[in-house]
Amino acid sequence: MKVLNNQIRVGSLQYFIRPIESFQQFAQQVRGLVATAADYKINLLVFPEYFTLQLLTLNNPERPIYDQIKDLTNYKDDVVALLKGLAEQHGMYIVGGSIPSWDAGSDGKPANICYFFGPTGTVGMQAKLHLTRFEREEWIMSAGQTLRVFDTAIGKIAINICYDVEFPELAREAARNGATILVVPSCTDDRQGFLRVRYCAHARTVENQMYVVHAVTVGSLPMLPAVAMNYGQASILTPSDFQFSRDGIRAEGTLNQEALIVGDIDPVAIEASRHSGTVLPLMDSAGTLDAIAKVEVIAL
Image 1 (tube, helix red, strand yellow):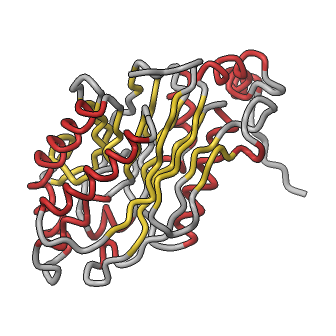
Image 2 (cartoon, helix red, strand yellow):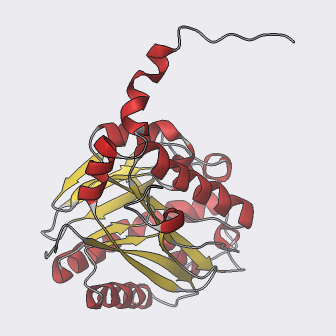
């Protein structure tokens, strides 16, 4: 893997959900996107959360959704093998969106797991730690318990799956453990849901002086309530300081269109900003709670 002048090229997908007739057709779409990323010399490619729900079109969409989600776990090994092979073939890191899996589930429930593939054949995983209401109540899924920071050749990387980025403690702990890149694969069905994720993703860049790579699903599958609609805009976000992008946006897509968003980032600049930036929110956060002796509630 070639990294020039500390620059890492990242790619974030606006993945278009479309009906398919076979797993091979799904794999063909994935291979094409990874090959395109390789043409752009991308070092880190991010698929969105639940892009694998496209596979539900291979089965009966009239069945209860929790049965369909359990069936989707049967494709996990094939999806992992596909992305692992592509990461090795093209010599890149691939964040494989997410798929329901038993690898971190509990109480007889699958978990929402993001698999992370290295260019030498390594495979890591991050379970979603906070489930949305439909995941918990309708899909009957299980939440993960462990936040991981992946130490890679392009820096330390953490993954917050969609709703997880709305809990600032996770990104803060990842940053304190050296993460300079936060990856946010998401799947949202409306403007409000998308903006919750996007606004929080941008806040995490400021709070922790880190890059955020946000990947999304777009398109629709009206026959499947799980992904009947998708609303999203992929982006590569930066801290807000002189050495980074104007407005803190390195690159972003056109809303709701199929696209690969590409941008170069510099983790060395992150490390420098954490020690000599205009403000030092990550460093200064260390003593925030200690500096507050107590919280007072005052009636006026």
